[in-house]
Amino acid sequence: MKVAVFGTGYVGLSTGVCLAEIGHEVVCIDVDERKIDLLKEGKSPIYEPRLEELLIKNSIEGRLAFTASHQQGLREAEIVIIAVGTPQSDDGQADLSFLEQAAKDLARHIVRDCIVVVKSTVPVGTNEYLKQLLLGQLKNNVEIKMVSNPEFLRQGSAIQDTMKADRIIIGSDDEGASEKIQEMYRPLNVPFLLTDVRSAEMIKYASNAFLATKISFINGISNLCEAAGADVEDVAKGMGYDKRIGSAFLNAGIGYGGSCFPKDVKALLHTSRELGVPFSLLEETIAINDHQQELLVRKAMKRLGGLKGKKIAMLGLSFKPNTDDMREAPSIKIAKSLTASGADVAAFDPVAASNARKVIGDAITYMDSAMEAAKGADALFIVTEWEEFRLLEIASLLEVMKQPIIFDGRNCLDEAALKACGTIEYYPVGRPAVIMKDKNI
Ligand code: NAD
Image (tube, rainbow, N blue to C red; front, side, top):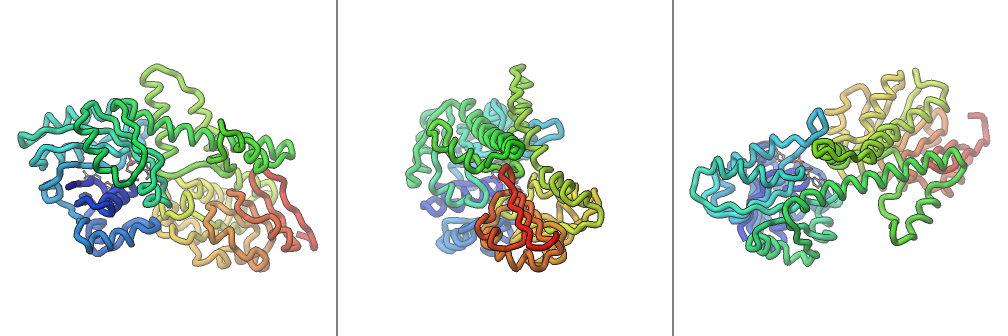
């Protein structure tokens, strides 16, 4: 099938590459010419495992092309997938301006009948609104059918999640359009759920809000565990064995971030207010998360007796491992809070430093390794659970620090290895601290 994809971000590019990999002819369109130039050279503008490899393979094999021209990209398209951003507006609601512009671009340049697949995360009713917008601006006499097809991939495993999704939601009022989109995805061999359009739109927000609430719930429990002397890891394990609960998303830590959970919970809350249906649970999910993101700073403040003039090493800046995405990363709030309290911050992230610099600026120092960041530090924060931090040679790290104090915001260090280090103060989240003193610290 001939597919055009609007947007070469995490969703659009991963979708385009995977559809090409299963045999479709895909043209990815983006208004960002810098991205298109990179993509034409076989370089991915974002970091995602396997993405660049598949991008190069499918481009060479002639199934994948890139353009900044809507006219060129839409010339043969029978299916148009919209994967542009829907960021958060100041009042929490989804900002649909990129989507509206995409609809206008599509209306101006589409020259044949097509199915428009909305993959961007959009509030209930948006597909209907977009269809009206499109129909009102069409330049050619073509038939447009709409399908809502929300995306559930996770950054850091976008290709794997696209190729092996748990389910594909297809929301449409048109049986023919629904069947055609099923046909497009059939080689992936993933279960379909066919719904009406509004339910498909709601499924995405309900899923993300539920997962975010699960995270805030376990973080609430972790705070209770710390006060009560219980271990949240054991508590979560015990809860997770219950099939009604499940073990996923029960990792206590410094809260959720990223381009989806924060904005999607707020957008759903906005929808609930608009519809006059109170949903205060979502307010609490957000409040717990905001509080949790400052946890390490509060703990360090207490332990070090203030932060003025202290050197803090921050390991991890991206909102989660295996991505260079800094959108709503907890590291932003932590870095700002530390520097506002007078601390000197030396940070290391395996891939996100240059994106981090754009958001956090030069108020902190960006180092080339964990070891460099740790040199002379009064305390070390683990902010993102990159695999290489789990495997760190802790003893050598502690050697170069001024004081061997670690605040682990992701509970990712191995306690047995820590205990073998001799002198250490280790503060995980929701678990008893490990304090081993061979000498005064
Ligand atoms: P992104 O910001 O990384 O990429 C969006 C791209 O669209 C940008 O490259 C932008 O230049 C391009 N664009 C904007 N207007 C355009 C237009 N008129 N024509 C062509 N291209 C245009 O966004 P993303 O993270 O890929 O997210 C896209 C959507 O998918 C959002 O609604 C998001 O909520 C949803 N989503 C994201 C994820 C995720 O993990 N990132 C997961 C599931 C769903």
